[in-house]
Each structure stands twice: as structure tokens, then as C-alpha cells.
Length: 342
Image (cartoon, rainbow, N blue to C red; front, side, top):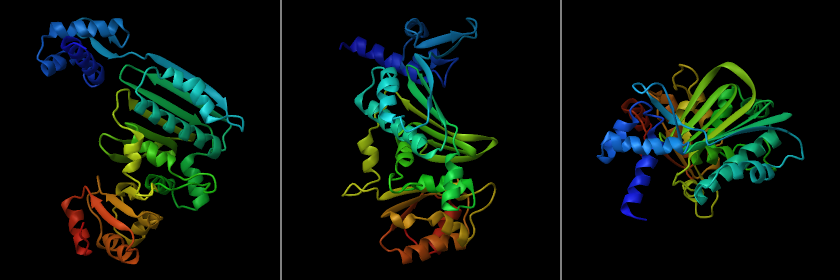
């Protein structure tokens, strides 16, 4: 490949990757990035429009650019014993993803088949809808069933007090309502493989953004029935399954490490003060060998909360290695008062 051709591809990949964040000024941003004229950038944009990677709207003076959907597909399936996730993958999904690298295709196969299998085996629904949208930059697949709802079902079976507590347990990993047939790893690892992974069910919205490495929880103003899962991944992602799995497994390849997003234990405007809140956060943690508590978004904790985790639990379970990240000064002080050192 000549230097000129390589630079051309770099410029056009940059435009495609950044146009969603700069719909009005992508020409200026690209010109500064590559130290070229706006006229030169506009020639690249025109080629991308002709290739249908980009689409335009507005007049010349207020022109907007956005990604064109290269593939837009949807279908509905009856949820019964004859529906097999690998068959749907092979016949309907894989052919529509286009030419992608092996690592990206592996992630899509894992995430799609895991999430569709969840709908087949756990939703108790009668129908599942699948939507696929692929652009030159990324692909999104949405799987929506009309079943009981993932959080409500976990709450019911595990006798939890709140649907949000079911979400906290899912975020830790190793949670399944059918331990004889499922390991409870699918959602945990899928959420970390994709750039964006969210679940909407009942009153709860869960969103994991890989770029920020943060989990978000929100209450849905208009509760929905069933479960909706969205997965989105950059078409040129360098992430691969082995790297992600290795970061949470030990020498014998067992799922031994987890990251607990502490902010998911906060309901509404409540503060994490009590031992009972800490015990809610600590549920099933003894199943792991290494546990990291992520305090992103947590502004303060109480002395009893910190003591229950970092002194009482730590002393009772010396075989579980605890650590923490992303603490503010107030949280750090409370953990130190419990006599714990990272």
C-alpha cells in the first residue's frame, strides 16, 4: 500500500469515526487533525457520500453530515423450543455484518447468541424482535422480548426487595436463575465486550459504557414489559474476547475476578451509610477470589458501611482479595478508618 493510499484511508476512517460528534464541523476538525485544507477534506467527504457511508442534510451554509445506514434489518421470532440462537446467527445476523475482522465477528457471535439464548431460556415470553443497524463506523443489535422482564424475574426468584438489587447482582456476575443449565456469565462478559451495552426492563435502565468503564442505573419513567438489550460495537475495534476473559479469570480459567460498581447500590438519593446496605453490596462476593469495588460516582459512605466491607467481611473471608478504585477523598478517609489498605 502506498503512503498516499494509506493516508487517504486514515483520513476517511477518521471522518467516519468522528462525524457523529461533529456533524457540522467535521471538515474543520479533520483539516486540523491532518494539517490539510478544508477543500481537500471536502473531497474525501464527497467520496464517502457517493459510497453511501455518509449522508447530508441542510443547505450549503448549514450542512450536516451523518452516518448512512448500510444495513437496516429487523425480524420477529416465536419464542419456542424450535428457536435456536446459533441458527439465527448463521442465517440472519452474520451475513448482514459485512466484512469485519475476526476479533469483531467473534464478539458479535458471543454477545448475540448469549443474549438471544437468555430470551429463549429465561424470558417466559412468546415473541422476540431483533433489530440490526450497521453503518460504516459501527453496528448496533437490539433484542427485545415480551416476557416477564429480567430484573423482575431475578427479584422474584431470589426474593430480593427491589428490581435494582437484581441489577446489582447481575453486574457482579455469576448470577443465574437456572444454575443447572447456565453459568451466569453471559451478561457480565457481554457488557464488557461491547462499546455500549444497555438493558431496559420494567422500571430499570442499566447502561455500561466501555470507554468510560462505568455502569449507570436510572429509573424508567414509563415502565415496559419484557426485556430490551442493546449492543453496539465499532467496526474496527481492537478488543478481543481472550483479553476481556483473561482480565477476569485466574490460572485455571475460572471466573474468579469481578468489579463491583458500588453506585448501583444507591437507590435514588440515598447515601451509603448502613451495614445493611453494605451487606446488600456484599451478597455472593465470597464466590470470587478477587473483588474490586469501583466507587465512581459515590460522593460519600458511612463509617458502618465501610467497616462492614473492609474490616468485618475482609476478616471473615481472608481468601477473598479486596481492593478499590476511583474513590474521592471522603470515601478514601472512611475506608482508611476501617483499617484497610489497598
